[in-house]
Length: 114
View 1 (cartoon, one colour):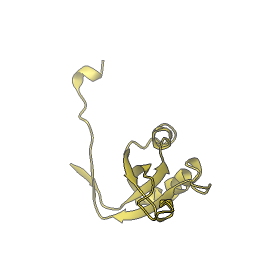
View 2 (view 1 turned 180 degrees about the horizontal axis):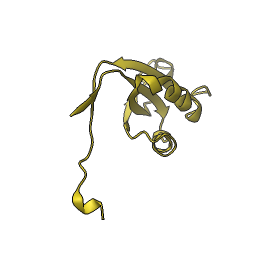
View 3 (view 1 turned 90 degrees about the horizontal axis):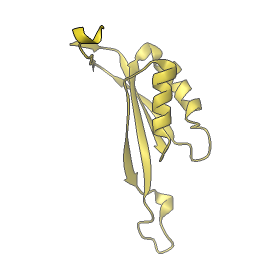
């Protein structure tokens, strides 16, 4: 199994409904397929009601991309603008170092070559 020893994980927390189009843009425009997203729910400090209760829950989407460290800054900037992170309630974007990543590849099958 191949591995990458200098990689970055870019994580983007987005409003509900925005991750799938960003995921597809990263695949189509950047050719990066190591991108996935999932959903989460929670409350923020400012979402409490006047009674001081829990407040309403908000659903967010969390998009994650693993990329070689050399390409990380460029992809980070691309995601920042494509996802409109700088806009009001645009989301959160951060990046962290990964010491080692396994590269998963599907095998070439003889019947697929036809």
